[in-house]
Length: 135
Image (cartoon, rainbow, N blue to C red; front, side, top):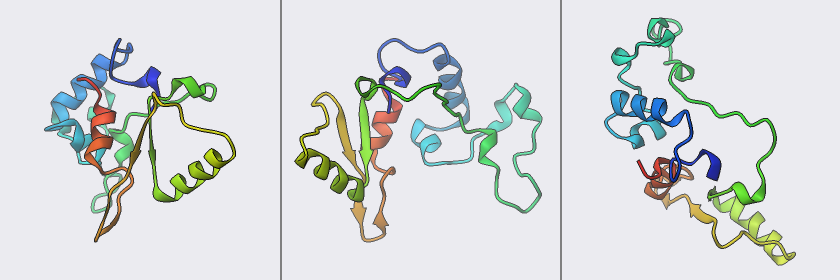
């Protein structure tokens, strides 16, 4: 998660539109993060006229309601506020640490939970809280 795109502190210019859509389309931000289908009946932009299903009976086309971020250049290391690591990625970070590299203390490191149903890298409450920021 990048500090400049975070929903904490000064709100970026796109934030009011995104927050409004979350409020109108989902019962809570976690529903958006987990990929729930939004209540799109309240939309009044160009997407309101798009079919949510590309072909009847097929999977829903999530591109209609998923917000996307594009960066012109790679982020600086100082831009990171939090990172979510799989257990495999943690091994790579530990290897980097052994070679003198480290994650700054100010960066929150989040690990996905492991349960009997598998490893869920991005489905933990700590991830939802970090993505939701200070709404």
